Image (cartoon, rainbow, N blue to C red; front, top):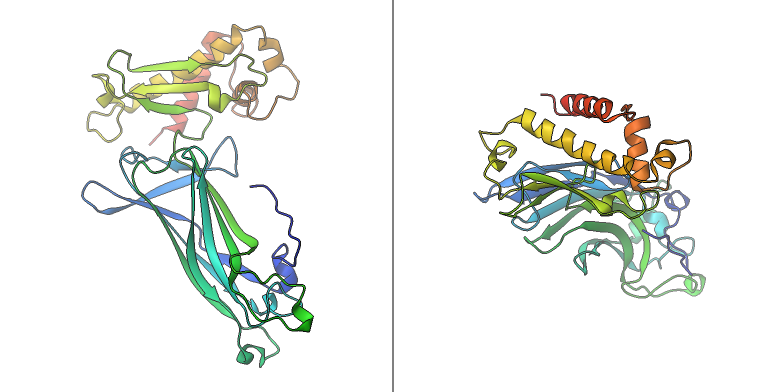
Length: 322
């Protein structure tokens, strides 16, 4: 998210006001077909550590299931936020809210989590002992959102105060955001990894196929121009469906290995291959950067189709081991 510039005292530096923010971290759940609450795990994306991706359990998808997100935040020593040296009038109320947005779904919203303030007794001790704990719950219905969801936890003015002469410089308008305490980006579609896998349903296509739609691999986005498509309509899909008893892990390893080899070979056959595998710094997020990652970070031998195939299979054997 872009940095904001405030024209009034704001929560740009928590330490300045003595505030200590403790975050439990986001937890994800959904209701399965039996209406049981089921946990979903997530991890930072390989392509961008600021992006978090759901580790699919083979059942959940954004179109057919809801998504429940919860977090808990504790604000300790918040007394310094109030008064002339703080960000709000001493008799104002501050609130905590989560603002979410999904550009792909063209939707945004906010969830109010709670309010807090100070009273005269909070100033009876030299040490700041103020503390408040707030539960955050954000629920999305099936098929409501897709793509990336950004969540920003912010502090805002819930109730304006009555400023005295020393507080005229403070923001005092209801709803005005004074700063962010946490941000979180979750990807719902795709894997967010170096291997962009998508499920399709097409009775006329094979079990799997690869699309490479780049024009210039040195600059075109790997994430947006490459897809490994797994066809759920194919009669043999059950052998690579991890929710089925017929699931064959070795077959999935072979599919993934062959698919990634197709991507690299498509790049090898282009006029850009020497630049892709050379010493030049590649553009962030590009096809070239992804292929260089295979070579430099994963240690794959890209010198020939045969060595590439062996490197890819060895990698997926290790990655998908029991």
